[in-house]
Length: 259
Length: 259
DNA sequence: GTGTTTCTTG
DNA sequence: CAAGAAACAC
Image (cartoon, rainbow over all chains, first blue to last red; front, side, top):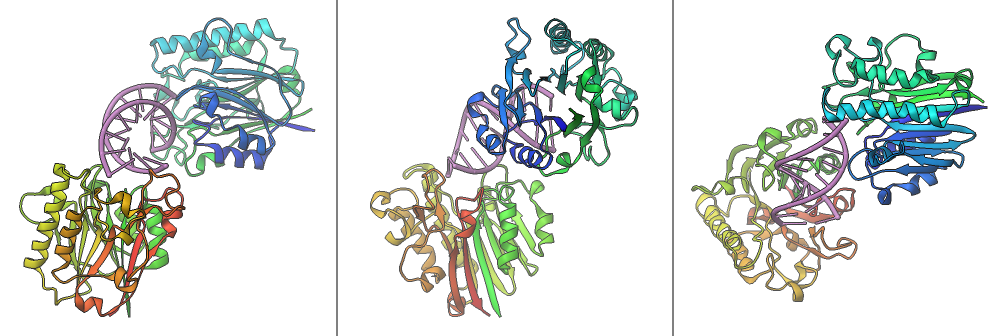
């Protein structure tokens, strides 16, 4: 049976609720990872999601960050954050076990400007995430790491690699940090199915007509361990939600598996 | 042929653009007077109005006030304000000649609290408006005075005359000031067709369920000189726009004439 | 450009 | 309750 997992940076789950519900109804993923829900837990829109037939786990705060995982099956073994006393990580990393799979949903810090404390925090977040996988899981087991990673890895992953080289989200230090995490034993399922070619998941609101001119970035990912890579049948970006009225600046990335 | 004129306090023309365009398309008034456009002239949404088949003249400012007149025919002899050096009156009174009629669109000051300088300005505005009609026009000619006058005249014009008596927008001094203007030779076309009965044009956002409980005020008017009063065939309040999502706190008042 | 919050106004 | 402004973040 085909098992579908998707990821979407909603940029406010409340502002995007209609788009998300329509997308769930149309694509019926087994799991949807959401980032930037931007809502305190007491205001999270649980009801319409339940009504759509999904289980939901989440953690958020006012204004910034916030992650959620929606599942057709009941998830178990839910955990948040990277351990230690970094409470911000709790609204950036949400891990669930569902249908016998481990799903780790992350909203990696954006980093603001190269050289700032925010940028250092981003690199450190990757480092701790690498340790998190290393010490907590086996890459021989089926594990999915999905989310907005706020890093484009190659020249094919940004609209203008020359101009953007060294900028935040396209800087060698970030790329190395992300690769180091993946080195543990993760495969970029989108690239597995599309080894070359541009396909973006994010288009800045601030660039006029960025979608029409395809001035985008591939910064949302679904990485999987080998047992799942072997069973992956397809991966694609769905442009449609980014072309709807009042879109997020990101769109949905989808991966299918034959389980 | 039936000639239709309407007035609407939009409470932001940008926030109400869809409601206004839908209403224009459905009711096709020859003239629509708008108040509280709340937009500087450089940001006024001219294009969609032209595309709807209307000419438009307007004057506004940031945040507060602002008036506009939309016409199927091209208006001429456009003027703003009451003369003198009161620049606020320029974004509260807009006069056009169109189809051989004089249309004076006003957004009368709300007055804030009885006894304040704002209340005094409101009374003075009425006084100067009386002089404006007296010295500039003949009540034997067809003239229309429309807009948000921020005064309810009778006990039939507010939801609770006992409680509201003496309050701002239902105070004897305001009522006298409005009547003194009308005394020049103007007929309240809504009351001409509905000599009694409650029919409101404004429901405060702050009163819970004010529309359902009909806790309203009749403070928007279309007044006409005798030549037009004789030709008036109907006048009505259209509740529908006040029941739509994201409504203004006012709704449309309409008057039809056989010209 | 599009979210968020907080403030001010009616 | 719902406009607008201003500040902040991405």
